[in-house]
Image (cartoon, rainbow, N blue to C red; front, side, top):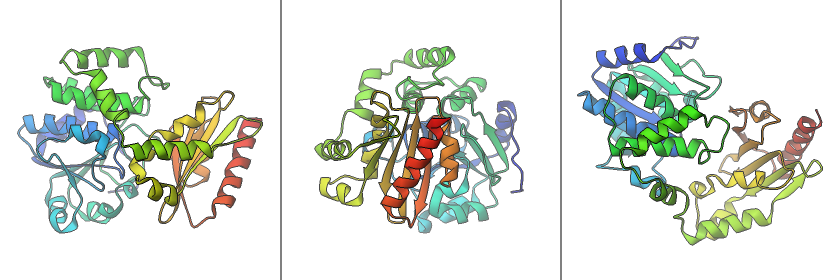
Length: 333
């Protein structure tokens, strides 16, 4: 691993894959639909190519995405069981992240491994920890990039693979409403649907199959929502106490930040979730302000309209005031 990021295209990636035999696929902590869908689709492709493949992630699969699991596809990181696997693999493919600390406890082993490291991702500002990067920031999702890989390889996409890709694209486009939802993307989705996948069933499993505790948590969060900057910004807060009292986990907070933009005149929102170390912040924008610039000031990053950051060891009241001031400055321009 050097100090530069080497960007490659799909033909170069396929040539490299052909030359290697054993692969470990991994993704970021708290894996979402794009992360897991991309892993599952690439796994099916590599297996058809006769490769040895393991999918090993820092965190377990959330309940609403468990239907993507098949025959123990996703393994949760256990150093005793998996360290040797990472050290001896020919290649480690990092999907849907481009900064090494996003795999948490796996990072030291991944760095120490002699495996060839490949990043397939659509986020901005990759850090130099891998050997090659298939990085397409214009893509709606990592799943869209994986679709292009499979298409270039003339892989016959079956229903299981199409479902995985559909989940990745659907979740990362906010059910096809975010800015990178292009005509081309809809044509891709049409091709995936022709395999016989069921969009209504998939959407229900991902978004409409929660335990009652999640609805109770949502009520608590929305009851405490705040508007600032003359009503043009909102802030939502999730404390550890709220999770405990509703019997929920951090997985149940997924997508709740979008409620902060579902208020008339609100252009910016942030959801603050308490963690053992401090606060995880999710930022969203309607489009006039680039929240990745704001996230960078809090030690994070991401996309123009959707970004995140982590702030450790800061009081909630102080953090909220910093956010409010920053939002108001951004909206005053």
